[in-house]
Image (tube, rainbow, N blue to C red; front, side):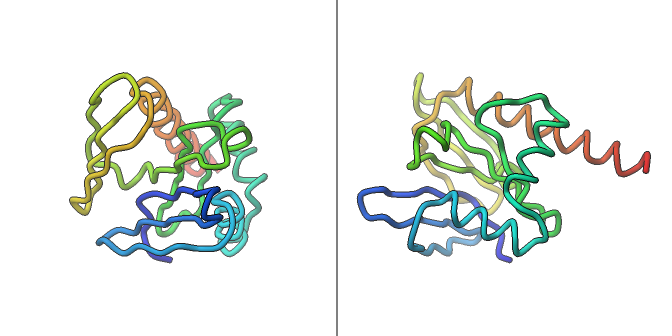
Length: 147
């Protein structure tokens, strides 16, 4: 599976835009959540199982990130509630190099491949999501070592 930078559904066009590491881009039919669920199944789990695992390690109840794949590591985090906002932007946590707040509702995100995007997201929400993802990955690694 190619490394993913971000995923976003456009309800008007009824297509999901996927931006890949290295500049590749594609548009897929249907909502982003369905596409993410399909990717999870291809990697051996359901999206529900992935979300439950994230809740187990972090206690989060809203805007639950999804570990799509362990290898390559693909951990997608929503910036809005995907249940209430189907056009929600999903950002790949592991591909973020740097973030910078532009104002109260816009962030500049620099990815590891040099791609930069401006996203409509609260700096507070994005930083919280990144913190949760770090916490989740630490929990998973600790659990693997203990097993």
